[in-house]
Length: 437
Image (cartoon, rainbow, N blue to C red):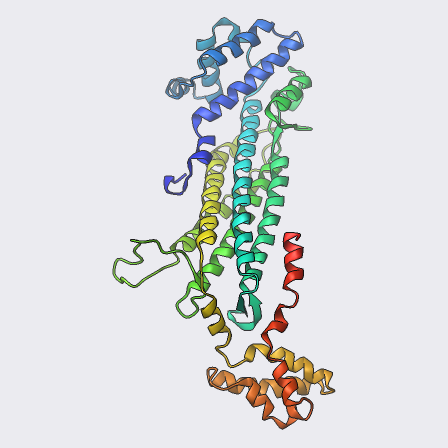
């Protein structure tokens, strides 16, 4: 985790203190269930919860010092708790294995992280929706292959992003549900030394579902799907960021990142206003996606358990969640403060002498009885003249002077095909589909 790209709330989930607190709750809830079953005395559960209520401070350095000797993190934690609680602590961890604690804890952490990420997406959706309605009918040019295609609105560009991040939200909700499972099943997952009711109790207390069958670890296909989902969300962030980067190019300049007072764009060139935030988002997206592959490789563990996944998850758990949280916050800020230039959009739209209306003329010719092949040829030969003149010539005027075209269409009919409003007649329909209004 790089502090530069971390926000406090998400980072706190992955701090040692939070991890140890979750471990304690798992152990205490399990002891509580064991007491209800008569396996351990009720006083053991009471002692744990009493200590927790009266002195819940976690001494991370002390636990680390014990681990330096034991070379086992869960044993180090249990030893430290026993030193605080006293004799009753010997009933902790009855019939459990380390993976019961570690895997269930990771499920809690990923659920906590998911809740923050879902809130992040909601904030982004709100910003995108606001900008979409603000520019619902702002004309701009749509591009394919980076080349002028046909007119759209800037609001439609935002609506596309809204729909995409709505899908991201749905995927993350599903991934959260899939990964938030509890396993308290003991060695190799057979419940030989612990009753399944303990697992049910701990799961209910922690807001998790019960893992139907664990091998000693929770199956890692769940985690693979979770981190793959984070990777897809990162890719959607990059898609929106790349759009902003292209729109900010000097030759385009239809929109740009907010440039704050006192901000500097270059150490050498005082005139520079660079898309540094969205370029950064492309880099962060690459990192989040990179965490999906090791998560997938974690699925194939040896037999009932090995720990080849453990070191991987110590990296990708915090790093993927922290990085994506930061990226979602950054893209939200970009969209919220995005500078939009409608006049430049219209200037660019008109730049190529009306070429963007070529399809309407093509279709009108075919409807007037001209073959599609001839219609295409008539329009294209005039369009190429406009292209080669760098937009100095007018497609409309060239078509009105073309005898093959005017044999099928009147001057008035040709002019009508250059009406910009025609392209926006279904914007309301699209917005209703996207925003449900």
